[in-house]
Length: 441
Image (cartoon, rainbow, N blue to C red):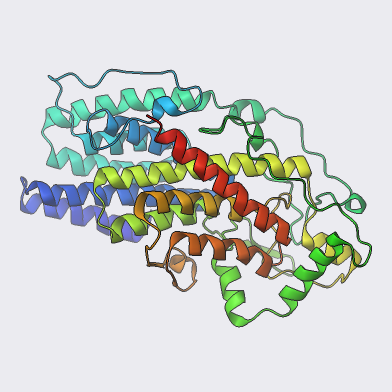
């Protein structure tokens, strides 16, 4: 567990011991702080476990749904949304008037209970959740602490049952993915690690708001044709030339939005994995910045996190469905095979097919949801990647950031332009569906 988390816990306990009945405003600040830190701690476990981007989106959305459901049934600040989700049939009545439920602690407890089901390093996660218990056990009466946790367990159980039926177990039994042929423009594992493809059956999962995974399937990619001057040849040539002529800033942009948890540094026979945040994790970090900079309440912050997480989850399902339908070849394979065998992209090519660009889809979907909730003129400093050794970047809006994230994939040499452009369109359509579904009366 990180050093700053330990300090966070000690400060929280110290504040409680100084004034056991501090005013409600201070308590609200603490509740919000623990919400933001809980999301960050889960993101850190994802990094530690090298969780794949699609799996990390699933591991985040269900805990947030638990927290949201738990909170919305005890606090009218938030509208109920669970009944709008695909295949949601569960329902429990609100807590009885006789129970003494603290809405914020119950929501955080539901988040913690559900997250434990979705991480590998459960001991690492428990070290954080123990701090939550310690804080609220200190600040609440014994009855309120217990009633709130019992309520959280009921809500989390419903969401965990909902998660168990989304198809993950079934896709884990699917046969091994068979790679295609380079001469037919199909994806092959790329250097330096030549990894097997990540989550080839992710498109078989149940989406949250989409009518089906094919609802916003993009048009097919450009037909593979390495005849000089063909549309495909020109797309490959563009990537080759862009990477060879990158400016310093374009290299910085590519690095800033890399978000590839599978990067491995090679030196002779020595291999060192570089743990990084996922694309979805980066956008959860941006959500955290937006919530804190706008001084959003606990409920409004929880809504922003949850809506964004749903958009990310559906975006990954939709995008991955297309990736393994088109099985499209990566620029690195094309250029090394047909143009320049010594050429290397700026970024290590992620281990899955090219079309559409995942960052383009998920970044656009997340940016649109955040714009809907917070506004289109939110000027912010993105410091999410500072802990990974990258500098801050400033953006005038969420959509400006998502556009840069999408363009970074060409700078990095890992996508052709149509994957970016169609990925952006795909992300917009998914965001429209998420917003319309969650806010349907």
